[in-house]
Length: 151
Image 1 (cartoon, rainbow, N blue to C red):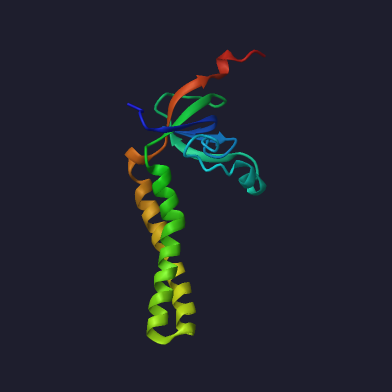
Image 2: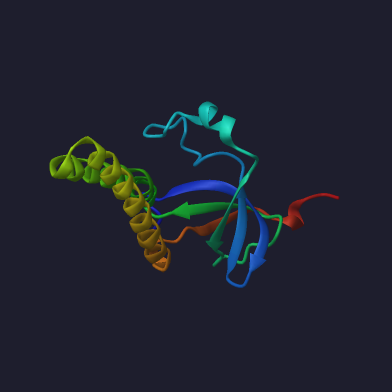
């Protein structure tokens, strides 16, 4: 049932109804795997500690549990395309239209307008995709729990 899903280890830091707030120590966990970004050491410069994400908690994980979080196939690629590709394509389209219409100054203004429109569209689409429960990351399993720890 989880074939093709990407998974990452995380620790549950808080609970909110049927959802959990989990902390991930580093990246997506695929940095050095085949198809991974390979940019782990580069991105560490910009990280300020663990990243926190809200995920579905269908397995009943508790605060302090180490869990495996699953992300549906294609979600990471779609998210990256939406976040990076859409604003760039909109910026280029605005610049081309501006250049064809009135020349260089209009190309710069069209590029800026396209960039802002691309960001606005990206935010709108990402909010719509967040409402789709099938695409939401979720806790696949508990790897350890608090009761296994020794005082």
